[in-house]
Length: 635
Image 1 (cartoon, one colour):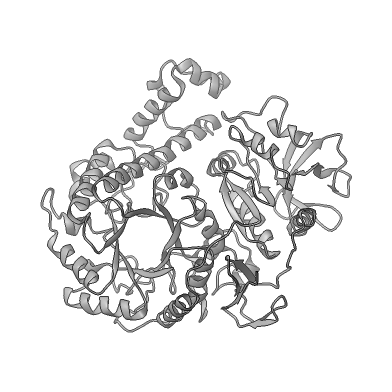
Image 2: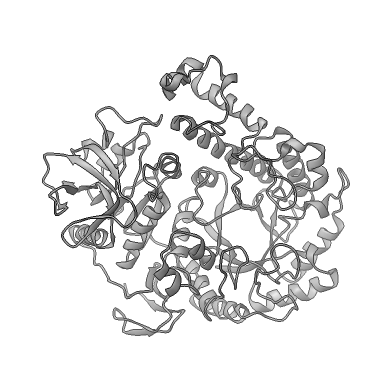
């Protein structure tokens, strides 16, 4: 795994560049990402290209032995471009423009902006496509950041209508699929269909689902336009895009099919603060991040582009964008780096080289302070570089457990949650975390991925089962656990004939007669476990494997398949995983709080996210807080 950083030569006097490049190389870095926000410096006026400064920056970095990941600057179109076509900005759900003054101020559906994005991409590729220092390209930056996937502009409305016509052919077919007879919503032409915002009350969920599918396809096609240009003009160089954490607004698997490797931006402390974690977790892991945040995304994005992935932005200190922004414990930057290494990252790049003393990100730490002195993380990067060099390349191996992840499932659960606390990401993360607490490595796979060869398969929820999914599950002879709401909707967001779980009834013969969502603080008790948030009333001739004290069945088993008809708590999930692992002969390792392990083909890595020393009984090692231990595996 290579180490790198994100650098903005346009932010600093040119006489600093050579020294910066030398210091990067001395620190053990070999990659630098630049350029993704530089459009206004490259082209300050329409057609007036100023390349010379970027030529010198690339040469300076390359002369120091650094390889460059060059970003296309389309996430920050300059003011002159916005002024030439003001309707290129996205429109939010309330009908307000997302205007100039920060970043990501464009609508994916605006044909004029798409043409400009292609033009600047062609210009950059022609200028630098065969430069020996350019190792890879990054398309744009963080698609969808700041809620910018969904746009409700006139441009989006027009392309949505064309998308619907291509999908359905006739307004009659659209009306039948969406069942627009409800509330007299039938359309006479595609021209009558608007985006689903600004309705008096909720819009048809089928309308919303198709709009989300459309918006995701717009991201995919926008990205593909740049990939096609770069791969043609600058062949034999990897193309990537940097995805974000806990973000489901477009289908990353679809984007991943067009790039060479997926990358993501890792900010464990910010994510802990901003998402659903309870007060105990936020207190206990305030300066470390929850033990599964980074690993979850490593495994997710490894599954998005045929196993090739990296970390484009790694948090090296306090960030600026969360509600509260603590500093990492000493050792955490090295730990996060080594955890990426253990999960198979091709590189980890720190954001950023030097903390900026100005503008929106001036409170975001870097490897250097604003005065140029080294920040705490610098020595940790050196330590990680030394360990990586000593260990040599690591080969990832197929995990024993597969966990099925679906972006469409996230959209379905968000459009019609039925309960205020039914959050798709939280449910999936909870299942992933339960596996990790028991010492298992996990592959997170798409719903259309091959599942053969795994020893356990987990489907936390999949309301719409894609074509062929039930057939692929039926071919498995390993234990399979299927979660609530799976098979509960058709492709057009209706309840299936015969009720849920639809086609999965062939695997576990049961019927979901009705469902109820439970308010926060309410739980239904079983023997040593609780079901919270969501409870399904199940009819089946099967004897329940787990039932509530009331006698209502929660988990039903048929051969190697199990169905869980509720939101399981930690004890129930743990019990189910242990039973499944016993059935397949896998050993579980109950890990102490804060400890996680990850195996490569040759080594086992143990990571202590606790603020206290932890004894890892399997190896007899006492691992210091915010530290890691590595042992060679015997064959």
